[in-house]
Amino acid sequence: MSPPPPVTPSSVRVAVCQILVIDGDREGNFRRVEYALEAASAGGAHIAAFPESAILGWENPDAHRLAYPIPGPDSDRLAALARKQGVMIAIGLDEKDGDRLYDSAILIDKTGKLLWKHRKINVLPELMSPPYSQGEPSAIGVVDTPFGRIGLVICADTFVDAHLERLRMLKPDLMIVPYGWAAEMDKWPEHSRNLERLVSRRATLLQCPFVGVDLVGVMSHGPWKGRTYGGVSVVADASGAILQRLRDRDVEVRIADIRLR
Image (cartoon, rainbow, N blue to C red; front, side, top):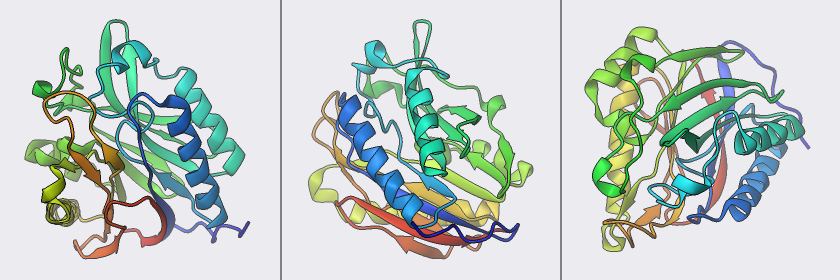
C-alpha cells in the first residue's frame, strides 16, 4: 500500500469511485464499496467519493422498508470501512427518519466520525410513490476538514441556482456531489456531455474544484425503469476545466490529485 501524499492546504487526493449499484442489493453494493475503498487506499487517496444512493439504489421504493436512520447500521458499517482503510468517505445513502425516507449524502472522516449529512432538496417526486421527503435549503452548508471546507449536495440539487448561490457565499474549497445520472440507453454517451457541462459550470460559479460521481447500472422501478446510469464521472478544477473523465458505462476507480483554492 503506497502512503498518502503529505496533507497540505493546497491539494487533496480524491478517489472517484464509479461503482456498479444494484437496487436493493445491500450486501453486494457494500462489497463493491469495500473493493473500491481498497483501491482508493492503495492509491494513497485522502477521500473516496461515491455516487448517489449507493447502498440501496436511487428511486428504489423498497428503500422505504430497507433504509436505516443516520447514524445507524449502514453509516456505522461505512465508518468501520473508513477506519479500516484510513480514507475519508463521501457517499450517497438513503436515510429513514420515522416514516420519512430521505435521499441523503454523508461525509465520514478516516477515524469513522460522521462529519456532515445533507438531505437532497430537489427530489423529483414524480419518480417514486411515496416520494423522498425533501431536505431544507437552509441546511445547505460546508464542513471544515484537514483539506479545507468541503461542500456536499446531491445530483439535482445542482440544477437549482439558489442552492448554488448559497454554497458560493459559504466559499467551499472543494465540492463533492454524488450523482444518479440516468438516461435511455440510446442517449448515451451524449447524455454524459450534459453532466460534464453541468459540473464545469458549477465549478466556475463556486470557484472551487468539483467532483461529480455517477454510478453504473440500470433503474429497476418507476417511470424511468430501464434507464441506464452510464458512469463518465467528472472532476473539474476551479476554472471549470475538466481534469478527469471516467469510463463510459463501466466501473472504475480513478485517483485525482486536486489543487484546492
